[in-house]
Length: 383
Image (cartoon, rainbow, N blue to C red; front, side, top):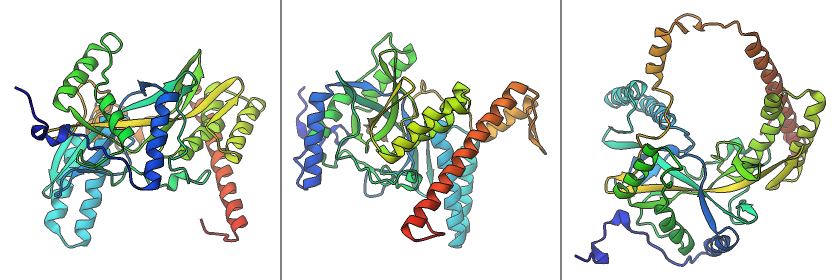
């Protein structure tokens, strides 16, 4: 029997319309142009996870920050939110509400729960698959229309555009994003390229959650290695400048630490980071290595009961915090009074000291940069 359009469930619809606002219209045109220069769409690492609440008016609203690399990261964030809700309830004199929120937080401490109702509202761990465009010139960098107003070294203060985003297939989207959504909904890892359970879960999700919406884009640093562009960070930066700040920090701290560079070897990396701060761009080369800031699309699948949550095959190595504590205690690795037991591995201790030195130097550099910025603005002592 043929299914007429009016009988298609709302969660399977994608409402598209030409943008009216000039900024949105320009973004739609830019997105369409990207299809020519970067025609291929590929998976960009693993999924990311965040927390959403179901709205009475329909749809699910995301909380900042949508940056979990494993489902448990989002569960921990959900538990922390319930504790903040308990504090708010206490300040409002709502003893019953406080108790309910604390019970929910305790549940998150012990159980890997992805969906829970607290005070009449459903909360859920939400899963987003990540993709990027690529072409003959490599992966797509940020677009001119992507918000990029963050100040160098200060992007930790930026507002996450995912915060407040409503997962609602009824929301009208531009033509380019609507077409991309349809394309991504059909994307499944080919059999043989991933473990069988990952492929099986992806096929199952396509059937149980056939609809979807695009989140605001995120950004990551990639490095060209052996003719391929590989992720250099988690890819959860909410603006291009945030990704640049992450790359600069990598060049000043993580790269010298991992490569065991001495002071002379660090010079090139520090100078490259300084160049990136002085002249923010999307490509950088240092010591024969080539980095690029790239744009990442995030797709949330939707089914009849709302957005997709974690899949059985998703990597989730860390148990809930109290379960982890019990495991460490059983292994004799957790001292109730002193915390983790001390090891005597000299090599690890030396590596830790080197990392601490680099980290503290970077903290001092940032503090000096902030002070210089305050002085330039004529507002000492303020930020």
